[in-house]
Figure (cartoon, rainbow, N blue to C red):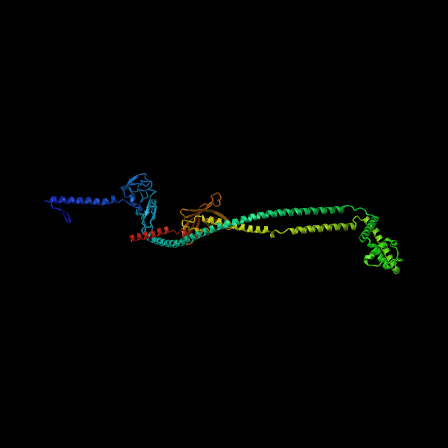
Length: 558
């Protein structure tokens, strides 16, 4: 047998005899049969079972010897998905349920891929929308990926629209925060300058006020001392008066009273004589000459002489019987009346004496005492007037004006310092990577759930309100998980439990809104809040890529 090469391939040449030709065809047939078997066997050996393997992990399974992912051992490629668990981590059995730790990948063409535990493979339940997890034929799974994918694509498109719009709102919030923070930093700088100036003013007013208050205190001490002296004097005067009233008056006899009157008369006569000196005699002589009398002045009685002297000063005429000429009758009448008056006076004097003897509180004594009391009262009133004149109400004084100015300036300084403190506290807070949470500082977000009202105030605290009872769910503890979660901790203690706490998961949304509040564990609350602040550009790009991948996968299937 010989081979000839030509353009059409190799051709078997005829043998010299028929036996050779028959043997040759038998050999060719055998070779073809063996070759066919080898051709059929070769793909099986070269292509292992790749069920359940994530496309991104295919390269890991290309080598002939494969290591378990935990590096505990290796296995030949022929043992992949042989329904016998060689690796404890299930590396060798992604497409079977032999290893409890292995994972099965659902491609779900037309919908999103997913991964599930291999223990759910061939369990009689369709877990993958494409039915790839139930390949043993015991159950027939319909492919629902197209319908599921349609809903998923619609949801993805809606989510993309939310992120696009939310990102615009977030950009505005970031710009506003940047402008507002700059404005408040400038305001803080201005307030600190004002604080410095106001401190100087308050300090000067304080020094001035201290000096004036010291002087005022000294003046008050002087006034108090003067008042004490005045009061002491008044008390002493009252004590003397009371003592004099309680004393028993000295007994006064009528004859003593007569003597006193006589002494008064003699004193008055002597005073008149001293004042008039030699003029008395001239007056008397003139009176006598005018009446035409020649009697000697020595012949007149003392009483008549007194009346004569009195008439000299009053201008009245005094006529006496037998001595003053023509009007002797009238004079006699006058003398009788005078004698009667003298008798009445004498009688009254005796009666007064008797009354004084019988009455310890004589009228004239009381009158003298009343006069003394009136004089003392007048002196006291005069002292009080002088005291009131020296006292000026404090509201009209210089110290009151300075005190008012100091109080106003100090109040302004306190208010200014409180504002500075609030601004400093606000500006040192963590408002996110781009300041996107700046607007959260002065806001609270509420949600009514059954009988409870939940109130979340970032940078402050969170609470749960039931009627008039309030439970603190925690105070602000910052952001966690790359600004995806807000944390409130150290709330009110639960009965026989931990302190209350709250975690708020942030989601992209077009407005700040609490969507849900749950209590998965006792006194540990979890809430979900949507906000434009969480609409990140990186997340938007990832969603757009996911949409493109879904579309590409769908086109490949079609």
